[in-house]
Figure 1 (tube, rainbow, N blue to C red):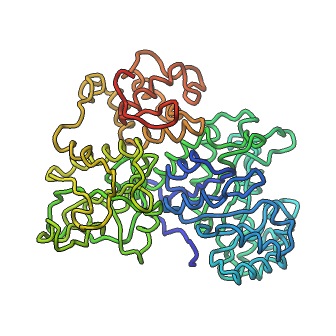
Figure 2 (cartoon, rainbow, N blue to C red; figure 1 turned 90 degrees about the vertical axis):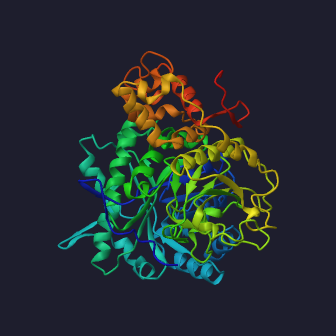
Figure 3 (cartoon, one colour; figure 1 turned 180 degrees about the horizontal axis):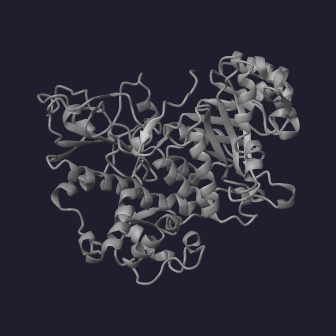
Length: 570
């Protein structure tokens, strides 16, 4: 497996160069809510911990693989206490199918032990694991370990690891917590030993001719100085706006650093004893930042609510053919996005609609995805050019037999997506099930409610009420509406994610500020944000924004957790 180096810098905007965000997720316990957060943005990485609290550690990594997230790290709690042979056996008992990297040690002296780590790597390679290995551990590069030399800082405890770090497929894993904010006067003294520790270490390794990739395995508001003991960022009274600003600033530095492959934020799905470290209260804002970190990515997307996971399997352009149809598919399994990203698959679609309503775009609409190129002789489309040239392919995640029912959120998201496609391509006159082109194929599968899509052709999109018609708004209201709709259904749909993670939609008020008042006024007059923390904690009327988001997206979350069509009387 090749090293996952970042691409070269690309211009974004007029005055700054950035790469895609390096922020990743550290998952303690898997859950449906955690899966939804993983799909919410193109995170750089997902790290999953197999802990004594239970859960299937491979499940978040499978979700990450399906979402096209390239770095998927697995760590086994307590593995460092075992001998190397026992450790290898325990690793091989896990489902390593979706793990691209294995973290060998955490907070243990084993991280400085080249013999144990080398034996584990050799055993896993012999056992068939072909991914990458992360050596090192939390204490690596502490100030107490540094030796000042005329050439710069040196870390003697790293010397035994030099041979491992020079091996193919072996990289450096570090933890980089920070216990203070950038506004703290001690920041300049603390930062080199917390969030920028890797730079000091890489300077030392570079003098030895070693330049590994760096994977920051845990990071965030932790590792507090002695006078600030008391837990994570929430326990220490940090405002969510302060913590988001801190992480955003750190990420901007990481984006400029080609060595840093990811920074996994601690923690998601926390157990109660780790609750104060939980990032769920800010994950909505972080997801928005991650989605917006590379404008060159967003520029590729036709649908503002989609996650961009590009496929290499397409033809540029349409070879002169007009787009006249949308072909509806079932994925016959959960891993369509990862399959489309594999050039060996030779298949793709423009969009994949997931069960929770998340939409992934894999091919631009102006280009021809490879989703319907097999046409059987008995198809009514047999005499026409290749359907890939005149159609847009929309996949719907279903089980392997394409027989699982579509969820209400999935149907609502697909209808909203297709309504937008119809507006962009007025020549479209048909929704075609895939099995009408490749006769005999079970796709999109039994029970697919085709009539709901065909009805889009027979009636116009529901008219907005006068209160939400942009033409009837003042300048400030139009600004709010523009911001909201540019974020698109992603914001509305992800309300399900953040609600499930104890994070309602009002986290966006911190970004909207005055526009949030105008946005809420579309539903109910009066100020939304009350007090300094109102933007983060919902102000006086978070329900107003929630109702508006439900009306815009056309679904709402019922008490039983399912998503249902939104009715105005709600």
